[in-house]
Image (tube, rainbow, N blue to C red; front, top):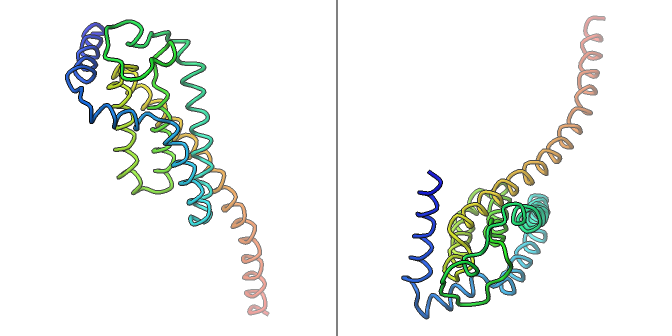
Length: 204
């Protein structure tokens, strides 16, 4: 079973990395993987959420920051050394468009971080998946095309990032909901007390 999955993984990698190669995709995939492009865009988006999104926007921005930080560290510092899978550009004859990057490949940090952003934003804005999912897929695809990750690296990154993004947002929403519920509970006894007093006066 594992051998079959490994063969499919390799076939898919070779098809994307070798057979889809063209200059237009070279340029496009380099842009999709460029952190220098994406960091300012993401940062601008979070500023927009904070300024125009009210409390929900602030919570979404906080969730994104925390989720990406956790997913990036988890993938790079824990899972990659633990799994120890070499990048295809270090172990195969690949078409390398840019540099190879680090040593280990599973999971893809780009995929994990993009999925973390997509899931964190989704928990606050359901319709955001319309544009975050295609972008995340494009980022993940670019890592395979550029020869630095296997398809399974990208899928693993998506799974890790989505789980962390959802868990982070869920915790933040639970904390916020508890604060709201606590305030509501403080007002209920007062209402009951007034109602009891009012009924007592009617009895007299």
